[in-house]
Picture 1 (cartoon, protein in one colour):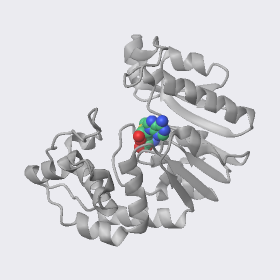
Picture 2 (cartoon, rainbow, N blue to C red; picture 1 turned 90 degrees about the horizontal axis):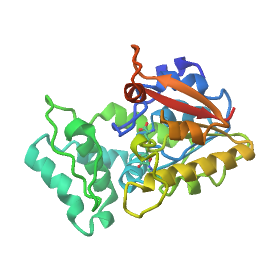
Picture 3 (cartoon, rainbow, N blue to C red; picture 1 turned 180 degrees about the horizontal axis):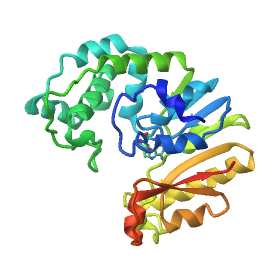
Picture 4 (spheres, rainbow, N blue to C red; picture 1 turned 30 degrees about the vertical axis):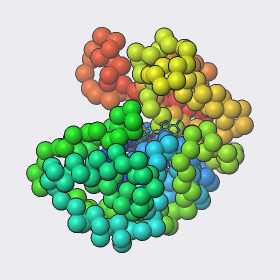
Length: 282
Ligand SMILES: C[S@@+](CC[C@H](N)C(=O)[O-])C[C@H]1O[C@@H](n2cnc3c(N)ncnc32)[C@H](O)[C@@H]1O
């Protein structure tokens, strides 16, 4: 796909860990020209969805993060009320802490969905670096960020996101990535942007619940899903970290190295920090 599609792409409503904004120009030339259905099972902030989803007849976006998916749904269905409430939120550390700590209430997940969406959008606007981070209890724990008069309710962006969600036929789900791919066929295009393979776990193979060793398990499962899509003639593209484990896992597919920065460096760790991989089956 031509990078000129960026000219009228919709801006995501939030920053998100692993967001693709900076590498999008390098990814677009690898996106197929035609597809009827678009699947993004690790959608996060949705940079790719908001850029290329509109060229599909129908989109299927998914993420395991319930707060994020709730925000997509409320932006689609309750824009006016969401903006009205968000515009009453202020940039103040005590207020931020009160909003941040709402998820310590055991009933938080049953609380008003518009309030939850407003909370997420607000926190990511004013927390340190716009970083979504939770502790083991799933409590948001990024500290307050220092900004000069940040705009909390960016009306134009929220309006455009809401219009996109309402006009580009989109199914939104909150499940494990594999379950979000049930309807794929030969006219589908799937873009995977999973949590990246962490280079330091490359040697772990055992699964231990609750430990960081789950990481290779997700990667193994993702590899199986990609092989199954390939066997069924479904086109997929995956972003992942540049490490030996990923190169080995996808040795049978096309692998493109995307350099994120300029300059030469023979040191492997420096190279890994500055490049990522794109895996394709077409
Ligand atoms: C690298 S981020 C995606 C970034 C996104 N492409 C963007 O532009 O903002 C990975 C996402 O995968 C989600 N995730 C992690 N494990 C998952 C799973 N098993 N199934 C579905 N989503 C998952 C995370 O919540 C996170 O939003």
